[in-house]
Amino acid sequence: MIRVLAIAALLLGAAPSAALANEGGGGLISLDKSILIQAINFGLLLFILIKLLYKPLMTKMQERTEAIRSSLEEAKAARAEAERERAEHAAKLQASYAEAQAIRASALKEAGEEQRRLVEAARAEAARLVETARNELAQDVRRARQDLRQEVADLATTVAERLIRKSLRDEDHRRIIEDAIGRVDRVS
Amino acid sequence: MRAHEGTARRYAKALYELAHASGDAEAVGRELEEVAAVYAGDAGARDVLTRPWIKPVDRRGVATAIAQKAGARKLVQDFVGLVAERGRADHLPEIIATYRLLVDAGLGRARAQVRTAAAFTDAEKQQLAGRLERALGKRIIVEEQVDATLLGGFVAQVGSLILDGSLDGQLARMRQRLARG
Image 1: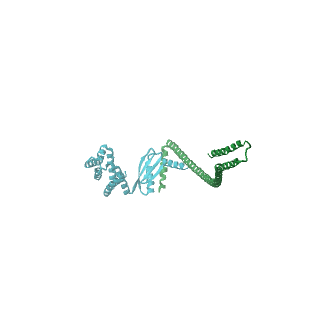
Image 2: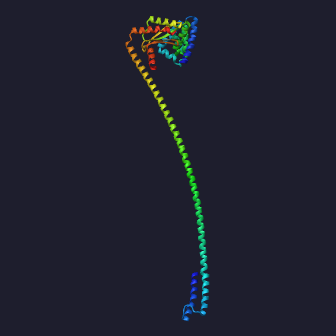
Image 3: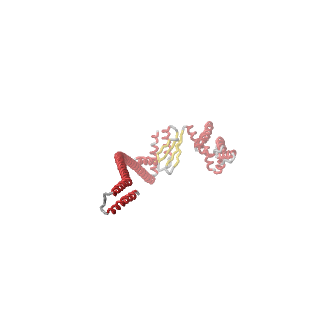
């Protein structure tokens, strides 16, 4: 809109100049009364240009400058904030890393302790199992020996009984009874 | 059986005191054994005397008749009658055994129950009795019983004393020694 008005003012200023030039039939500028009109025309045109074009343009430029400056400051502040946050994050990261290292070291230490304890417990359990197995084995051997002795004793007495029963005659009975009677004295 | 023993002891003791007072304890014992033998051999009499629904008076009558038949004296007749009346006829074997012990104790003697593989000769019996008498300090009556399950020798029991002179005992001891190693 402002531009349309400025162009119209230029056309208005140019029209009298062109008429004056045609009337004189000479050069571009005639040193007569038209120069005054041209000067007024020029002044009017200048006023209109200043009023309608230059000032708004300057205002607009000022606004743009302010906006850019504001944006720059905001960007600077944002950068500072980002830098601060980055530093903060870096510090947190460092602290987290240190903490993680501490946890890892602690976990490694605990794992080492646990491993040592488990190994010791396993050794003790193995020793106990070996001892138990040894005792059971010894007990089994004792039991087997006792069973074997009992079987040998049973077998020997059974065989002896059969042989004796088969071979005993009356005179043997008499002798056995006599021997047994002879042992009665020992009762007292 | 323990109850039998207690009851038998009471009856045997009562009879022994009466018989001992009359000085015929041993003869009464013999007669009592004869009555018991007749009773044992008479199944009908056993049935009557052991059935609780037979009247006590009838049981007494039957028992007295058995004793009379066996030729027992009045004391023995009355005693078996009383035992039958009280329903104790089945206790007679224990009563006789206890009575015998009381008589033996009264006469200062003991009985040796001998299980033997081969029958004793008279000489062996006397020899054993003599040895036991010397060892125990009382007169011994040897009661012999042949036991075919014994391998050889004999086992004698006098009261709670047991003398094992059998081959079975020797074999058992040998088995124990072998088993112990």
